[in-house]
Length: 475
Ligand code: NAD
Ligand code: UGA
Image (tube, rainbow, N blue to C red; front, side, top):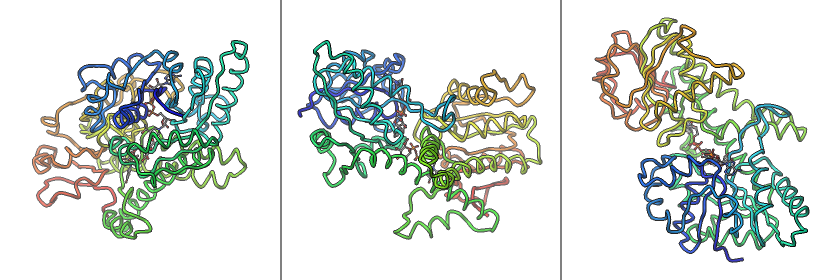
């Protein structure tokens, strides 16, 4: 089957960069990205590339080359579905907030809606590709919806048929373009060999054949959840080791180096931090646990659930460390927070550990100044109020109303440290490691602490710093 026209439903962190790279590498294919969110589509179409909805190194250059050449952003979902030979489903798959499986199972409402739209508007034979991360056997659900809709429409004599593939995405935010251009592997699962080969041919435009793995549908869907679970497990493992290092006088950087030098283990994903964040690790593990329980394997579920429990405990431990070192009270203390994004090189704050940690410091009565190079004040405000709304079952919460701490935003890194009781590094932005820490240590109060949850200060000479320093995992 020759593919001339691709439609991608969902212009988010995955749909946007992924389709931009396909358009860049396959000039002969027209790629249309559609979304129900017109603000998002408008931002993708802005002339000023600094206003793209997603910050991702290298993305602007690709958008500049491809936009309105063979890459288009639109809200006209029906039209682009009807023209597509191949449709990527790249919509969000959050955890259910209520009903059966609340708090664990994936909410498939967006996937179902897409499937119904595809069934209605597609023409001829269309390959449907699951790009979103989905519970195992979702392809069966999509198939059932498509078949049912097609049957009920068959009186129109409009012949249509579908092949369904699973092609999960493994990109990491902050390095998405590099991950897409040079993937470790591309995974394609399916039952229809012609459809699989058609998608393989698209990727072969830039990915070596030996990096394209084909499997059955269920292996492909499950592999995505398992890959994220393994990665998250490594972060929880090294964070647990960091606590042990603090207790024993060992140094987690040295332990990471020694352990990671074993080629069977590898040296990646061994950096301790404030706990893992991001939109996927937590939701994918919750979903994995739900699946295990559903298939009668509670022991397997509880094994993976502990990865999440450790992550929660670890974040609480960081808050306790800060409170204890500042004499058990934060009331009216000035604390500078460096970083709000869940990791460096992204403006994404979904499930960022900063949300929980900042919330707890505010509830302890601290006055915070928050800096992040890519996250703006409005985003922080939204994240903190949504977090509290969730905790309070939708009731509005205001820190000031409850006579607790307060926060303000700073887009600059100067003039914010004077007389601070503490500085807390939460995101591993490079600009924080190249700050003049000697100067900062002179500006903060004599009894102040610098809390480095990312180990950035391991790279600098601390001898001349005139303050107390706590570095994660550094006993
Ligand atoms: P996102 O929230 O950034 O984007 C999803 C987009 O889909 C939104 O803009 C939303 O408006 C749109 N959408 C929802 N329903 C729609 C519909 N019926 N029609 C048209 N548009 C619709 O989400 P994301 O981060 O891009 O993640 C998408 C999927 O990819 C998720 O399943 C996620 O688990 C997976 N994933 C994400 C990443 C990542 O780094 N963010 C990496 C790999 C996989
Ligand atoms: C992760 C996976 O790495 C991707 O392969 C996957 O496609 C994606 O989830 C997804 O499915 O959404 P991402 O969440 O963008 O990518 O970022 P990671 O680099 O994996 O970091 C996740 C979290 O772990 C961050 O909070 C990061 O700071 C933390 N982390 C990571 C550490 O604390 N230490 C490490 O050594 C590595």
